[in-house]
Length: 385
Image (tube, rainbow, N blue to C red; front, side, top):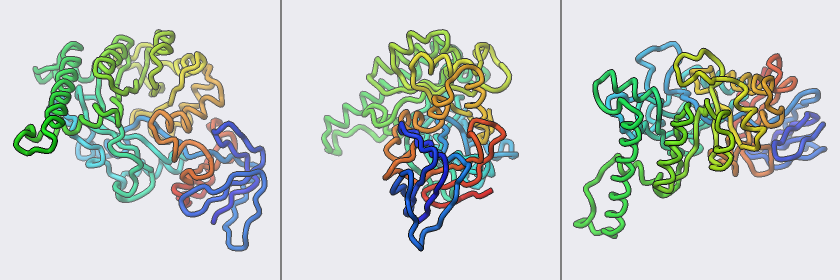
């Protein structure tokens, strides 16, 4: 077993130990307390003067999909030859050998939700994975974990240049509705067939991929910067009775009251960088604080490689600088994304029974001068400064 002692423990579960201990057995946390005595066989890490927190979670990125320093050969995030591709699976494109994985876990980012980009109206299946490993199959927390859909400029721009639909916001919404309507029909025909092969509809891989969405096993993950695009995503989700997360939410600060009423999980960012297109004109680190201070639960994202994944903590720090509460910013990269992604039974806080994903910092994690000293994933120390 491994005993981390004497550190300031940010459990993110409602309790902070100014000087506490965390006991790890195998891949799990087995105890958290003010004082735990090690056995002679325990490995002991003295974290005096340090801050111990849950492994950091990026709720929306493309890690392993757009590989570092490679250009086209490593660009596997957008199959922009067909605007409706629900049957694409992130796990078939993620390359854990990409050095950005190492940069992620060395910065304390231990779990990510990663998947296709926003070229297509329906882009495919996201996956939740740990950031340490060499084979993606062994890193999966949940796959599929969400179905990517995208509104606004990106699908319009990609397919307008190909002189095909969608070239308008109407076209994007219509393609998403059409696919969902076909999936509902496919699902109903399968249920009516009741296993009779003569009555079963012809196998359709795209429709099969949408069945977990219709069964509410996974949400639609909606790329939406503008307020009107968020409203379209909400409208479609309501029409079909589906789960939904709104991702990016760049104009969220303009529609706070409506978002509070709708009570839909929000994944906000990336807030660092240039306003390179019109739908980013409201881009600001003030947005996370505006939403959080209004009582909305949010997670922060890097959208890696838009913001390199090791700078997720930096993004949280800038959000605090622009009005977000310090504790809420920490929640937005730990327990909030765990809850929004549906994996809080395993991740997001330091509690007995959860995965031993832990990051230790030599100071306040949101002080950009602080550095990680130790990182654990599934109870294994994967980094030591």
